[in-house]
Length: 101
Image (tube, rainbow, N blue to C red; front, side):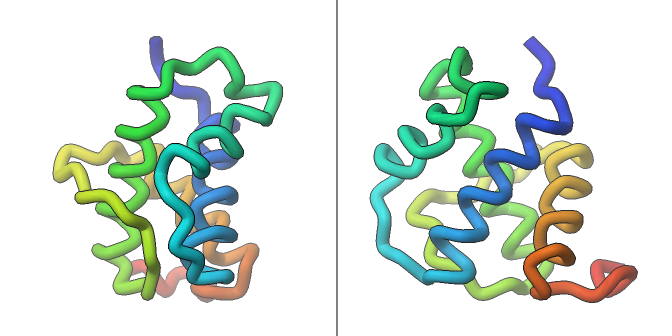
């Protein structure tokens, strides 16, 4: 099942808050539980959410944003995840518009 942009945004927002803004050492299981609390994503499988977090880790490192995400990045991360991440990082003040280039 394809991921909707809104679902990517939820994952990005939770990850940015936990692992970029707060720089927490939150384990991945707790992060997934926090993500699943959102109505738009509550029916997603744990494994699928974990892979989405790994996609976020890939793009966050490509953008050179300091983070504490405790998973390995997946190298086949999709562009939609990158777009959602950039939007969320801009909203959080970690990137300026066009800075990702």
